[in-house]
Length: 623
Ligand SMILES: [Zn+2]
Image (cartoon, rainbow, N blue to C red; front, side, top):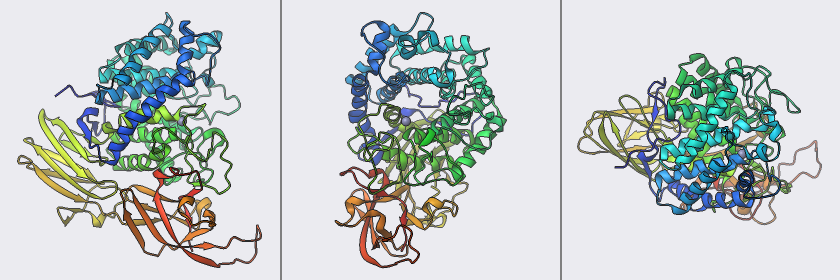
């Protein structure tokens, strides 16, 4: 067996954490599972598409301008280097699993060689500031994204090192990181867009070089002291209004807030900082108690791409950036490892199967930047920040390569370990091969999850082992069965200690009835509506499934009516509903309840928008 490849967040032995990840390569996902289709699509469709788009958008040429291979002005966003770095990271994770992919390896090798040439003698590497604003280097940190871009370069290097590819990227990233340590170890400054914090901790984990960890901690502790020029967005947008240790609420630009919190947990576990972890827990309660969409998405406001007030969760004007959903997944992964609290795995599952999965088209080459829960009839979808359909790329192209790096590393998030056993956190058909106490363990998972809640698990090992099975929060606790008998989980897990020597097969049954979900009484935007969910999947209704002449906003459902579950192979739902006659007055005094019966079909939210563009909604008015 080849040496296992560590995945994202490979904690040091000294880290204080309840759980540790298994290596990325310990879990092999079955090709015919839902995850299997996502992974294959990412490898053969999305990653080659990203590589082409980096060329077409000029992002690679910007680096060639630094080396003198290409003339002309800098093109595209000033942080476009990060799109290259994120794609490199994705390719590295992919090559860890499919090293024979020569096309991806060629991209990695040629881009690595380009980075070597583009790097300054002192280690600096940023094409925008080198080409367009050389005198402004490090002078505009509130807006420059210089450390943000460096962070993504470092994360690409960490992935490359763990995957055993692209050694030059590691050399380049370390030279740049060393320059950053020299430049910032004793200067009071932070970057307007967090990312460097988590990247430096990962680099510390890879190298053991303590100054990287110390600088990450320093950046976190300096934030919130008004060091950033607030410019036109103000300090809250930049999370510079209050120190993390004192913050009570998530606020400001959603992606920045969530990336910062990922770094906060990284620093907390590696420096044994209980106060910092307590701050992350407090902010998690705020984010997931009152500022999270049903799909797991974050960010209620297009303006400033920001969190809103508590319970401000409009469905149609949801901002819900793909990168914020990915950041939430990454933050929750770190929180899960730090605390062992099952709620973090529940949130990973929710955001992955809904907001994240829905951000990409079935063809793997079209993407949403914003992920609303309602696309209104008559929506003006001509603007890039809220289009009516997924686009092949964006001028601000942060989301597609971010999605690619998450998908390429997805098997690394399925299973965790502690001192005595393994915990299956996210279910997919596949095989887990690892060691516990030096003894080999093989676990075969056979299931049609998330379409079906029946999971067959065969464990073969000679070593004593406690197998933890997560019982998702959407599951009615009295309905869970193991080998046909009711079982009661403790703290969200079934902990099974057995003699596994002969290869024991367990059958876990997670009941998946259709759930009619209501919004919190304070979420005014969708009061009077319900949503449908089954297992981890949120459902929606699309105009494409309505009869001609019916407007989606006039459709209402009867929440007490029986729902038919159709397996084919994506599970859809049909139920009774009605079509209201639209009011004639904009603000009528008398309500006309007249409605005509209709049969409604709902499909998983993540599959919406794969036919012709058209209206969609998750929250449905009730009859
Ligand atoms: Zn994005």
